[in-house]
Image (cartoon, rainbow, N blue to C red; front, side, top):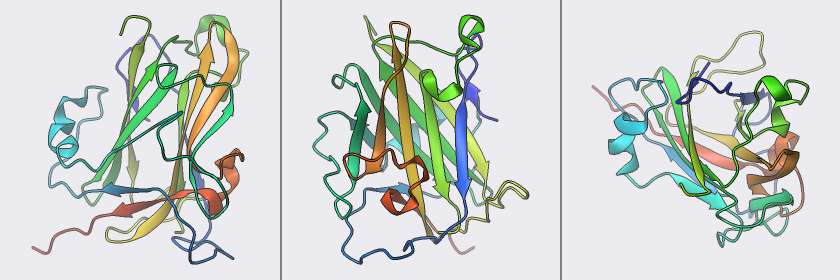
Length: 224
């Protein structure tokens, strides 16, 4: 599922769909500060082809997010969540991730544009590596709740009706869910050099810690 605009590169967009509370996680304190992202409603389906041209109207709403080292939105504790760097990421030029969401009542669409100063994809020479060791994007949904720089685009759609047998429950427009993003960086043949989490406490690799994730708001479907 999903498409990368460079057809020579295999894309590993790993959707981790975990069962837990939808918005308020178990044991969460009410004053936890979480990063947020909105998924506006659109009345037409997007074409998942790795070309972001049809996202122009969504981008114009300015509801996307961008995260990178030094973005001013760092996570500092379990009650102040935000951008978290693990291992080595040097600066914005080394790795930066911009993401927009949208839904049409049937699918949740994800567009990610990532700048990276040294593109190291999963290819024929690196098939022994696990996918997370390459340059890749990991999408996490809590469903019960140029020069040296390269630009690569991930475009994805996820059925709101869920994924039977894969531990993903149905997502409902008008509700909010736990959400996180992780951009991994492999530079100059070093797999894995570093990675950035959109939401964590400043130290934890929060791929399985839903209590440290941000929040995704699905816009309601307008009454017809």
